[in-house]
Length: 178
Image 1 (cartoon, helix red, strand yellow):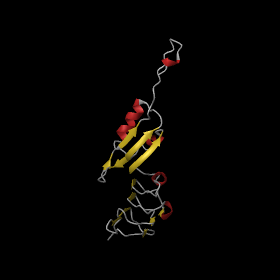
Image 2: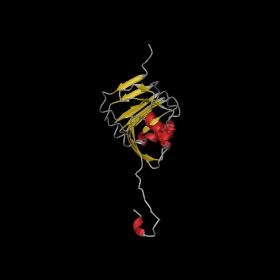
Image 3: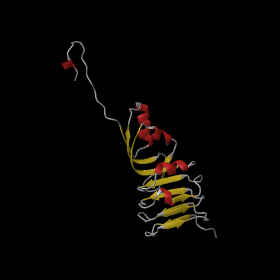
Image 4: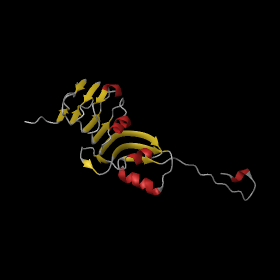
């Protein structure tokens, strides 16, 4: 019989170390809140799922290969850099990142416009699942903003605040500026 390629460790709430080297596991689900400090994933991993792992740091996380990862799910791992990890997944198709609080010019949003996503229940969806807030530092065109809002329905895209200055120079008086 063929060994399972999915590993469910959701009941292992005290797991501190996981070494998948030498296995052909494609998907691993860790217990949320597990005190993991060392994880080694095999190069066969296709679904990279990192959720609620508060103790896991970048130095304690190793994937022996990222080229097979087609699904990336990340939520509430404060010591891991999701952008660095996702950047290593060169063939990713579906993305879900929760708890975002970012600021930028929109270039990050443009980066993932061709990616699909995963909803909160784990189902594949056609839109990229970036969840949280993204505060723009510039004003996009109406078309660009509409494209982002359509492709990232779970992302609250905030426009920068603005100030209007009204100036009446028909009379030479400083009081005409408001």
